Length: 330
Image 1 (cartoon, rainbow, N blue to C red):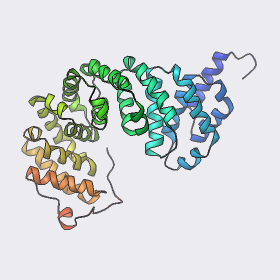
Image 2 (cartoon, rainbow, N blue to C red; image 1 turned 180 degrees about the vertical axis):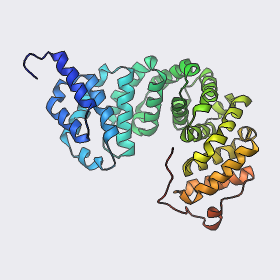
Image 3 (cartoon, rainbow, N blue to C red; image 1 turned 90 degrees about the vertical axis):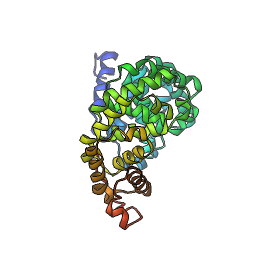
Image 4 (cartoon, rainbow, N blue to C red; image 1 turned 180 degrees about the horizontal axis):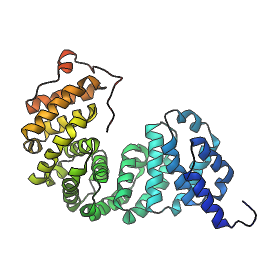
């Protein structure tokens, strides 16, 4: 450090440098040079910035880099000090690196340490922390596998407490979507939690983007107890959102939404003629962009169940028409 610079000033400067890093290499260099001085805040910042800068090309570099191993070791030793934000940030960042970019980031030992942090800090988490944590656990199988029942209970109870206050569509969608994948978590959710999440979904529906909307519907397909907690008004509010979102949906959104409405008859009954027409047009538009047989089959099922025309591209070709193309979410 500079002569006369206090430890506190050095630590603040380090955190600033981490936040300003322009590449994964920048982060690794700071870890190499100053990692021994990192506290838990620096570790959280390093992981949070790194996953945002990483890409699929990062895998080869990170898996072979001792500086990245050092950062992972720092996560292991510093996570005992994590608060709710650091716990959510680090778990989410490592989940993206491992699940999306195939980086070897989290082994069972580290997953157990992080699960203890989640169990400890769940009671202090805000909705955004819960959404990040659930999303990460839905991606990171090793962390979900080692999570004790007490950890799932702590998360579920916190969701039940905060659900009436949730006003961000992405938070509600991410939590419901993850619960649809995490049976152990869903099993611990009290009835009040399902009712709270269903009311929250109704409240944030007008703010949902296409991905939030399709993920929420898909979650209701998987979570019977959550769907049962939805009111007719809730289904109606979601159905009205179709009219705004259908023209913006990508192929996966279309397939997922049609599939869900094909199953959730109580929900599809609230679709207006205009909403149905727009969904049918979205299916016709996006059919050629469907990149998986699953999307094709879900779209066909939804169209048949809802009495809609099967898209011409799917009638002509039983396989995904254009496996390399997919319209991005807006």
